[in-house]
Image (cartoon, rainbow, N blue to C red; front, top):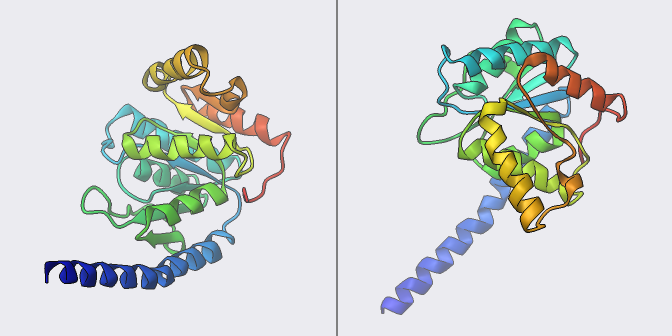
Length: 229
């Protein structure tokens, strides 16, 4: 009897999985339709836990304002902390301010600086990631936690494996990022040879908003602006 119950429960799960395809498809369709109309943007990532009095919150505001003044829109994860600072800077600068929100049990709520017609909501992390990667002309990565690292290393992996076109990945805060990328260079590259030197060519570590714009401008003197796949 117990075996039959397990089999019945497993079959119900498989049925639910099949119907989930339509919900996933709907998120992709809605995301593609809205994001394709927005134009060139730069995504800003970082911790949801960073308060508005923190130096990195204020720096993110300045970075985002410089980005929109340079002619790009700003995309964030739509929540509080660094994400809010990114949208706030874009809003202050009079530029496009996009939020890709995700339904989470904590930390996530949309911030008030997102353009009302550019506030998208997702249930699936992987659909949301596709939107960031496809429609970003660069990643600006502020100090953050596991989610920030996830976005960073996925982008590096996709570029490394040539699944997407190259775009600049800019890490802001040498004090925060220096130790991690010393380890990447000394251990992954130097000691074990698990990556190639060119894998790190597009990663730049900077400390201020002017350097962010310099990296973006330098890259797009050589490459055209377009979706990444």
